[in-house]
Amino acid sequence: MPFYEYVSTDPHAGCDYCGKPVTILQKIGDPPMKKCPYCGQEVRRLISPPSLAGQNSRAPSTGEVEKAGFTQYRKIGKGVYEKSAGKGPDIISSD
Ligand SMILES: [Zn+2]
Image 1 (cartoon, rainbow, N blue to C red):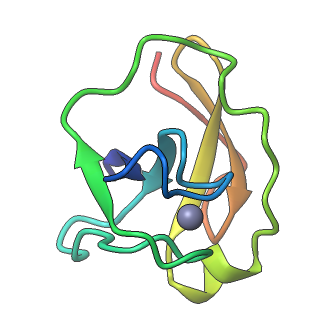
Image 2 (image 1 turned 180 degrees about the vertical axis):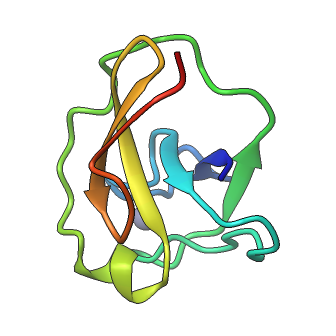
């Protein structure tokens, strides 16, 4: 399953969740996320993931993410993702 990264279309309007790029694991065929599940701000999908690690230390409540049917992962290392919401393996390594 592919990872997608989303960020608020307006860097001044997003909440803590969407104001920075957030990594979401989606099934192939899932429609792209259009709005932040927390604040409703429009989000856009990033084409390529940012290379910076350790930027995703924020910890939003996960209920809304799960309700929206998304699985959310945060990057905890080089090519390693830890699940923070939704269904799926707890740890994914792309290595
Ligand atoms: Zn938001």
